[in-house]
Image (cartoon, rainbow over all chains, first blue to last red; front, side, top):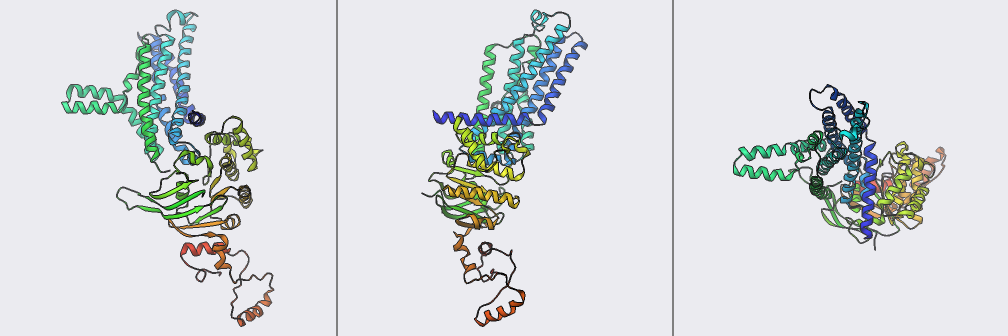
Length: 278
Length: 288
């Protein structure tokens, strides 16, 4: 029990340090500002909408920014925080303490996930604030309640932000896995973006082979498809912007799905890192 | 029980799939007793850092066995008793010295009040009390070395491993580090010190281990290693230049020889090290 408490304390220490480190990286304010600018621009685009509800356009632009810039932050932060430790040699001092390599990697992942949580929370908060402000500015102070964000509820927007956070955290786990093999942060980042592309088109590829491919090709693609998470499952922004909501069952399911894939990625990363010579 | 025990340790790296393996360490066997201050000498690429990393469990030996306090180095529990200062450390620049030492104390398993007390004590030991409130990013190289030493000493470890602790330091900074090592020695701690500073090794270490191209080429106390270079040698101080021919004639009459030199020439340990590394003896590599 005491060993478990000490292990949790070490992981928490590394996570807190990673969070403090990544939040100070220069790319974080740059990408956050770009995402915020896109959200704000999206709110003005609503005025130029031809037929589509302005709130939908705003939410589409906002979630698009959150998804794209969140993915970039996830990949860059995971690779930089891992290679930063190696290049500074601080990893040697850390692992010379009674810290297991698994604890080190878990701490890194939790720290980057903390950064992504802050990123998604601020982005979602900004989005809700802008939608509310636009309704209030339009002369109806109760519009947020009355129109329930013009069909999209606050709860659904928050849930959508949560789903984007899960997706980004999974992406950072995948990048950490690649980092334990790769010899440079640039290579790890490139592999992270390649992974993002594969996970995003996985569903399309499976569908295409399901209809056109031969029996063994279908089986092979199904098998390969299982090796990477399906990021289509996280694409709920369109439904939420259109006024839909996310059920508790879906949220629990997607959290479990992310935890399973994340657990496998972390386990593989720990295995690779144990055999990596520092 | 030895603090560190190496038994025929070999470490090979394969630079590429088809490349021939490179032997960083070959059949290294030696032990470090508790309370010893051992100097690890060797040229760049001789295998010093590989040896230190094996002790810390950061690398696994290809063959042979290494033990720290009779435990395998890969086991996290074995590292509770070890403090390590890497070569030219660049710690987290956004943390203050206090925060950095507390962070490492937490990783070492110290909690609550003991973490605070030990951190304060370690910072005091390296003389960084006033500067520990500043961020590490603003530290000079000497201060980084000192705060690195503080994180290594925060658990009062039984074994302290220092990798080039005085590299790139000015003489004053190097002397400060040496004084800290003397303090560890006075408290009965075991120190393994890897350095190119032979004068400092001679001054601080009770024993010296010399590596050359991955092989252990010499091991012994400083006096054992330097004896062949000091035996039958007399030092004449402040001899007026005009007296030198008379002294030389007198010495040669007695079947000895005189080699005059100025102050600042190689120390005995330097000669011993060079002889061991090059495989020669005092005749080939004696005083100039």
